[in-house]
Length: 467
Ligand code: NAD
Image (cartoon, rainbow, N blue to C red; front, side, top):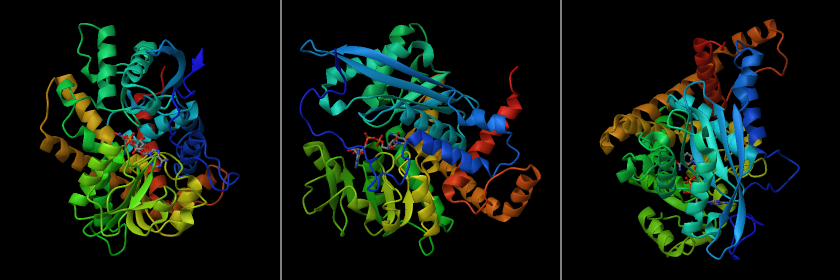
């Protein structure tokens, strides 16, 4: 039996940007990174009991599945898929399904744990989950991908459910994939309202207006709020701001449109095949049309080519990583030439890079805040599905704005509170004989983690540890 990793045809494969220039320098395992981030933030919560901290840090479960697909020519391929449920403390698990050749159990576990903290920062009543199937969908036909989706969802069976674990889109999955997930689950559960099993569905299948744009719109709202609150000296809005975007899919391409609408100039963009730069500004709609026609932003008329590494170090006001993990690392963080970074992608910045950027005074709006718009509108979709209602787009965007502003304020306020109470937290730690170096001021990622872990821990206590 062949495996899903063996390419069916020879096509360019996506390069997963996890290879640092200096390989020995950093541990780039995303789950190790997620755990280190948790541990670093937990030091600022001296009242958090070690046993509870350990429970909150670990995924509640990881399901690993093997399943076969028969291609049109009769070849049988085996696929490996995962679904991780990180936390159900604040509600059912929620998180996307990714199709990518770089999917691993640890990547899924990291992404699931980031979902827990993201839902807490955004204050939506979900826990964290994530799933993925390890294959490159660009090497398969639409019909093959449909079989992968149906077999994966059938194999998961009742390990997902409208009130237990609710999938959504992620890299290389979209509304069409979500429609297939709904259809497969509905076939297995006749006679019930299955719409809330999955979010990010097409509009005429219970999808929410505004969901397609929600990740990018949430990123816009968080950036605007942070700028209004003085996160970047001398820059209170996006008017005339220069913006660079790595990754030109759901999150990145729509961010280009929305930031452009607010008066920003998109000077560079990229996808797996490479990047384009035009200092006078790119017309996002025209670039999207070019990508739809040719499959890539590369070759957009009037632009110059740039590599996916060099795009990150271009001089700009706002840098938006919107592709995959570990692209801003210790080996390029010193060269970042942006005034603020808004993480539309999950996990684009390593902990070492975070330290460098914080020391250099470049604020990073962390993924668990900056891309929380997606899960927030997924939550709105889920509510609409349960009520069998459809809200108009203005209502969705208005509610999203409120949520993102509150979340951004809460993260910025937490950073200030930690700054003001460093010595009292330190005293508590010393009184409790906790080990480790002296606490220092925190960047926005740590502030968001501290806020999120505090919120989840509070609910765990309110519920009471069962039995
Ligand atoms: P997508 O598949 O729609 O787009 C991904 C884009 O990144 C594509 O343009 C692809 O060509 C590009 N890309 C992939 N590898 C690259 C590389 N090495 N260099 C440059 N570009 C590369 O996926 P998406 O849904 O836009 O997800 C992008 C990121 O946003 C992921 O980290 C995802 O987890 C995160 N995110 C997505 C959502 C959502 O609602 N879709 C929500 C929150 C977070």
